[in-house]
Image (cartoon, rainbow, N blue to C red; front, side, top):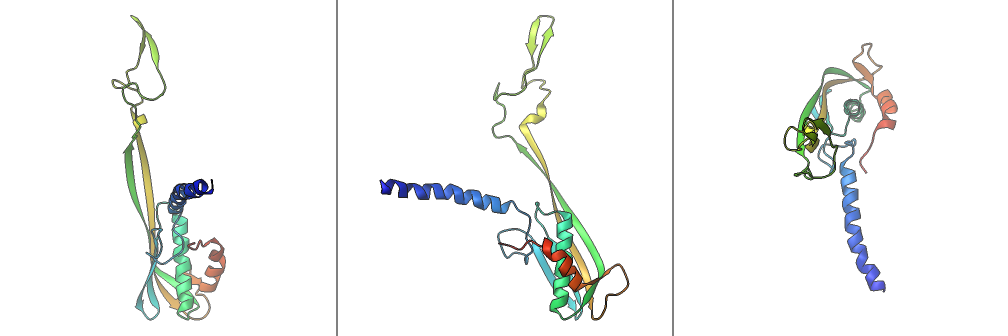
Amino acid sequence: MTSRVQSRKPKLLLPLTAALALAACATATPYQPLGTSGASGGYTSQRIEDNRYRVTFSGNQFTSRDRVENYLLYRAAELTLQQGFDGFTIVQRATDRRTETDVTRDPFGPGPYGYWGPSWRYRGPYGWRTWDPWYGDPFFDRSIDVRTIDQYEASAEIVMFRGPRRDDRYSFDARQVIANLGPTIQLPR
C-alpha cells in the first residue's frame, strides 16, 4: 500500500509545481538588476562622468507606472550612496509606455449552436423566431478577448553632489529617498 502512495506523490507534485511557477510569473517586476531572475525587467546604470549616471528601470505588464518611477528614484539614491555622494539632481527624465493590444479568439468558442449563451427570440409574422448565431448575431464579440497590455520604462540622467540638498525641485537627498521608498521596495524571492 505504501508503494501506491509513493507513486502518487510525483504525479501530484508536477501540477502543483507548474501552478506555482505560473503564479510567480504573474507578479510585478521586483527591484533587481536587469536580467538576473525569471521575472522580466529591472534596473540598469551607466556611468557617463565621475558624478553623472544614466539610470533606467523597466517593468513588466504587471508593474504600474508609479512603481517603475519609484524604483528608478530608489536606484538613483542607492547608486549615489554607493559612489560616496550625498544627493543627486535629475538633469533629464522620461517615462515611456509601450502598449500592445492582444486579440485572442476563444478556443472553446461557439460552434453551430455551441455552448450555452443568451437566447433571443421574437414574434414574427409567421410565429416565434430566434437569432441564428452565425447570421446576424447581435453578440458578435463574445468569441474574442481583447486585452491592452501596458509596460513602462523610466530613465533619468542624474548628477551627484556632496553636501546638503540643493534648493530646487529636481534635487534629492539620497538618504531620505532610501528611508521613504525603502518600505515599498519588493526584492526578488
